[in-house]
Length: 328
Image 1 (spheres, one colour):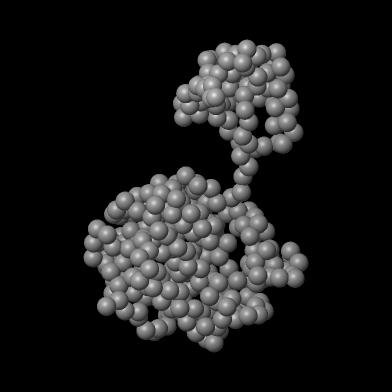
Image 2 (cartoon, rainbow, N blue to C red):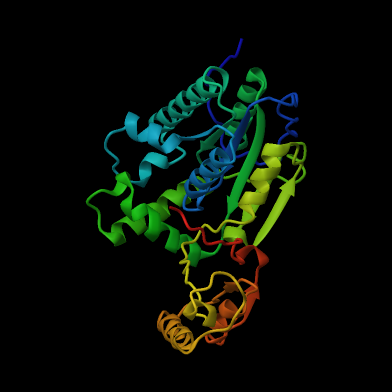
């Protein structure tokens, strides 16, 4: 019978390295998986959680995200300031522990009763004590565990993440930008006092991926099954920071003028004009590190060449075989 651990509280960061954490659960082939986010605030954990959940559902793996911050907002209707997150605020710490346990109970319901396959536990989980609690919970319920730790020490990325995401957070309703940034930076400082990252030695028996500075470097350890493998592949191919993607047809081709489908002709005169106009538009956007992808077709290559930037040819972008049918 699945069981939920009693709350025993989180201990503060230890001066000496604690004992190694054993592998979390027996690795049964069809065991549900808990994906545990780890990291300081403003490191993109919630963004990663949502994107990963959408992806796993898309490939046919029933997945649900459990955001502990939302449980906290339901428990504490009014957020005052960063002092709620101080490690010496015992009353607030107790509320936060209870919110985490409530989220774990819902994880248990989803994986053990509702037949979900993956639960993404979206919280900071910055102490070994909290992660040990989660591992024990997973072990008693027969769940696999995979950690995702997002590590970022680039102040520009952190500031941008705060401005992009936290300004619209329910915690900061009716607050101006400067107040939000100042309070949130102090909230991060509260977590930094007790932050214990995953340790490459002590945690070597665990399955995890570390993401450094939103994808500049990765460290992967003990990937054990299909779900974890797909998760790692996906995480190494997404971007936490916002970016724009422009989709454009090629300019008009010679065969377009004849009304023919398919073929591999070059651009017509109007197609060349379109390519030049497209190049002017792209220059006006002042895009840094612009990447251009085209198919292998002449008309798309000629359209891209007008941009005067390096481009890559992808066979996957070639048009699918097309035919014209006459239906009566």
